Image (cartoon, rainbow, N blue to C red; front, side):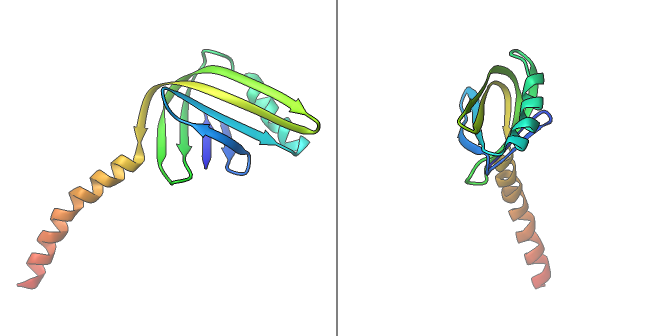
Length: 120
């Protein structure tokens, strides 16, 4: 899994929950205080209502890109562990997986034509 919102990148070892629907929600858990300091600086800039672009890669390898507005940003700390949750209301979304499938379907007829030409 991977998530990117504007300049904030979240790698799979931090992501604990990812849900995509009308609202995109990403929850992360950080155990290293130095990493938390990095995330805290980036999260402090993000405000409710800000527009942001996003890129998501799921466990299955599906890629989503799009635009949305920040709905909510939560930050917390609990006994040396730090975490945050970002919710984004999706305005525009495009699946790159769909694009790959379409490109494969378009390339198949041309491959067939090339194979037919090579047989003569």
